[in-house]
Image (cartoon, rainbow, N blue to C red; front, side, top):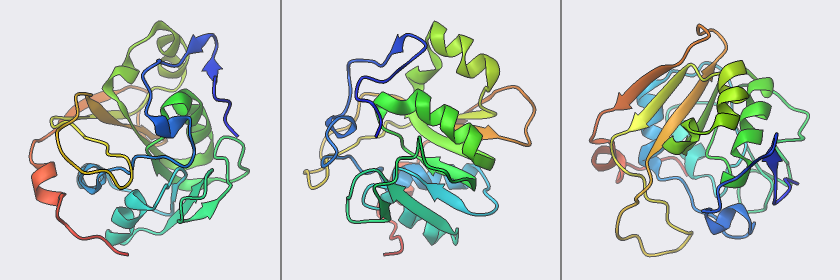
Length: 204
C-alpha cells in the first residue's frame, strides 16, 4: 500500500488533495470526455493497463474505442482486479493509462515508466510541471514525450455527488513514449471536448 505521507527525495506532496487520495472508499471518477480527448490525440497499440481504475469510468471509454484493457485498483470499488498495488505489482503492459492518486503521482511516474513497454499516460495537474525536485529527477532523467494541456477545466465530482459548478485547476495529459526522442513537446487540446463527449455513451 502506498504510504500516506509518501515523498520522493525530500519533495513532499502538496497539501491540497482530494479526499479520495487518502481515504480509499471515497474517490472521484474521471469524466469520460477527458479520456476521449486523450484518445483523439494519441494512438495506443497493444494492451492498456488502467492501474487505478476506480469504478471503471476510464476503462469503459478505452473499451468503447476497442482497446483491450486490464483494470486494477488498490481498493475495492466494484470494478476490475482489487487489492493490486500498482507501485509494487510484478506486472508490465504495452501501455498504461490512469488518473493517479495525488499523493503518489511521482511514484506512479517512476513505476509507469518502468512497467510500460510502449506508452504511459497520466492525467495530472498542469502544476506538476513545476518544482525543482521534479526538474532534477523526473524531468531531467525521464521527461515525458508530450504534454497535452486542457483548454477546458476538468471538474471532478465525488461518487454520487450532484454535478454542478466547474473546476478551478488546470490539467494535462503527460505522455511518456518509449519510441519518442528524449525531449518534451507541449500541445494544447482544442476547446470543445467537454460538450462533444460529456453525453456520449460508453460500454458497460
